[in-house]
Image (cartoon, rainbow, N blue to C red; front, top):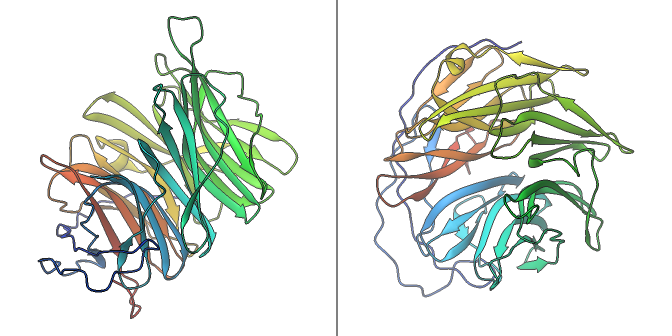
Amino acid sequence: MFQATRRTRRLAAVVGAVLAVTATGVPATGAEPRQESKPPECEEGWCPVSLPRDPAPEDITGLAAVADEEVWAVGRSAAGALTLRWDGRAWQNVPTPSVEDVKLRAVAGSARNDVWAVGEQRDPTTRIRTLTQHWDGREWTVVPSPSPADQKNSLSAVAVAGPDDVWAVGETESTGDGRWPENRPLLQRWNGRHWTVVPTPLSEVRASFHTVVVRSPDDVWIGALVGSPFEKRIATALRWDGRSWHRCDVPDKDGVDRVGLGAAPDGRPLLVGVHRYSRNSARTRVWHWTGSEWTKVTVSYLENYNGDFGAPAADGSGRVWLVGGPGGGTGGLFEWDGRRWTAIEPKTGGRGRFAAVTALPGGRVWVGGKFGRTDHNGLVYARRDGSPSAP
């Protein structure tokens, strides 16, 4: 189905702009203007997009396109947790709830007034608790969520099936035998009133959930790693058919350290497994679900490429994107256009990697991550689709 080729493109670095915002994320009137540089021109259809600089973004960890002119980004800023909203013209910094020591890792939504962001919060006792917050169209509100373990409870991904049907995944760590913490996967579901922990076939196994994808209310997929961080781990997926969970192991014998899950052009799941050899050395493999098993996708350049790629996204019209970065490099993307894979290597101005991608039908794609030679800066690129409001 897939074949690979290489074509390198160079994009200019992002230059941030400053926006002052009110409590609801609308630009404040009378704010003192700040000096900003003119953003570089778009190249090859990809455009660097200015981000608010107060507070300065340090990392973009999650992106979600809720509508054509409604895109959300979450991550970290110099002041703490960060939420940004694209309104069709510019990114705005939207204030988060006054909760200290928070990390936001993912965001998803079903409508302009129904957006969820998830992550973790460290409490005064150093215990880490899950964090879920909801956007109702006016403000963010923290919503209580279960934290069953005595040490760590973290959420890494969220997906929305409907206003009253939301899934969030992550992992927990408990004291265990006193020598090594015991890690367990964590799955939570929102029913319109509260979050509850949902059992799965891996609930009592050393494992972690990394990502969740909703194809329909009765077709939900979870990307997981089985094993502890101190041993060889295998990649697997769990599929919800509306009644029960089914385990679908990936036949990768080399072990996997990180897993991503998205959609292929045919709508079926695409799984990406990353095996890290060292801090600056990694191998990425791509797998496609045929309906009964995982088959390896041939991406010859990626196979021999020292890079950590994942977070696949499809636009519904035959294109797929993988984002990440080369080992110790400056970030990169792979694009499938229906015929071949193309390598895209942006000039981001420093070391780092892309961590998030979201795509809309018609060609609009957003990617985000962190880059910098010393201090990291959160950056966002958009793939121009030719519409008047495109950045």
